[in-house]
Amino acid sequence: MMTETEELKTTVLHSYHLEQSANMAEFGGYDMPLWYPSGTKAEHLAVITQAGLFDTSHMAVITVEGSGTFDLLQHSFSKDLLRCQNRGGATLTEGRSVYGLLLNSDGTVLDDAIIGQLGEDRYMIVVNSGMGSAVGAHLRELAQGQVTITDYSDKLGKIDLQGPASARILENLFSDPDSVLTDMAYFSFKGDIFPGGSAALELKDGTRVILSRTGYTGEFGFELFTEKAKALNLWQMILAAGQPFGLLPCGLAARDSLRAGAMLPLSHQDIGNWIFGYTPWSFVLPWDNDGESWTKSFVGAQRLLQSERDYTYGFAGYDPRKISAGSTSEVKAEDGTTIGKVLTCTTDMAIGRVEERIVSIATPVSKGRPEAYQPRGLSCGFVRVDRPCLPGELVWLVEGKRKLKVEIRKSIRPDRTARAPMAQMRSS
Amino acid sequence: MKEIEELNIPGDIYYSKEHEWAAKDGDLIKIGISDYAQDQLGDIVFVELPEPGASFERNEEFGTLESVKAVSEIYLPVSGEIVAVNTELEDAPELLNEDPYLNWIVEVRPNDIDQYDELLSRDDYLAMLKG
Image (cartoon, rainbow over all chains, first blue to last red; front, side, top):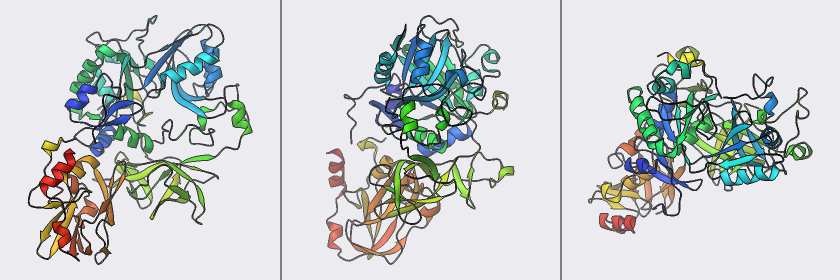
């Protein structure tokens, strides 16, 4: 049962996790906390009702600079950078970021990524744990024209602060919080910690950070990037500032259950080495107004149009019971035919069914949450099937003798705060 | 996660290799999961209990425990008939994390009481955990 920590990489916050007696496990080549002693249920609920703090320093960050950068990113990234702001009407600008996919030429997914524009011909790309080298190589091979690609894997600290109290917690870290936080849009960021950057953002104590209004929980919050040497201090500062708000450190188990309830994919599990099909994330593709073709050409584009593609859907069960994702389980239609497999299955502890309707602990009473509601949790995740399914359709997740009835869904956890107006989240 | 020294492993009951405990209660045997099991599983969010009256062989799966991320089967350490199930666990599965010894899972009428003596003592169970 002992983790082979000598073989695994560690983040700069590793000693904190061990000191707190976190339950550790391997993820993406790193020894990471699954949960802390408060437990994954408390951590999941903390993010929904107050705030949670995640060490995400295992993720990879790459910068791409030079006159050939824009063309390289347009060619390699699924989203059309000219049409990704203001509901597709406007181009990516400095201080804004966008989510999309890096496809291989065969239409399979290399990784998902968030690309942010640091400045003219300067971009940062955040990809998944351990992917810095592969993504860097992929881009280098595609680059034409002047491009410098720098891999910051294992050189930065990255910390995610997520939950409705996040902005109020951060206020304590800035000398002029209004100048930083007022009107900060979803998928925007402030600051620059890379060489050649001029838009520095400093905390009260002088620590330089990038503050990004993004995250992987589906709730209101931020991702913070800083140099490795400052990361532990930043972590401790946020924990201290967050204490009056009930901030809890959270591990990867809560991260996974939160993102699943928010219907966000996990790279190499819900998207990966199969042709990107019809999924809940098809907004990452640069459809034109007719929805028939693309507004730009990009790596993998042709294969998507030419190939048979299958279907990925979100689902939610009726109680917390789950099935293992992977090859031992199957998805069956009501008539018993096998139609696919389970990609992800976990429990969103913040939700439950009230007469078939999914209700969250965050749902207002006026919208149907019973007073003093204690959700029992619902299984949720993604299935990959060989035929189209409709929202509301029931399918069976089967593993050996175990059979679970689940519902195909367009959304799972309701009343999420990811896009809530900043002003609303800053007032207590 | 608890270190082995921090685990609560009472000496007056027996254990199985699958981390269940068994305690004699008159003619019957109460069954639960050890502190090691609940610590490893993390927050238990759902317990699937058998029907009273059902019979199982030794080491046969008699129910499941759901944590947030995974399903764990539980195996009956002695063969017999289920005479009672702890229905409190249906509404409050977290009781197994809070006190895995107070909060038993099922009560069994054993077919063969010798099977009870074949289970692991506290010392044997600890040795297994350390090994």
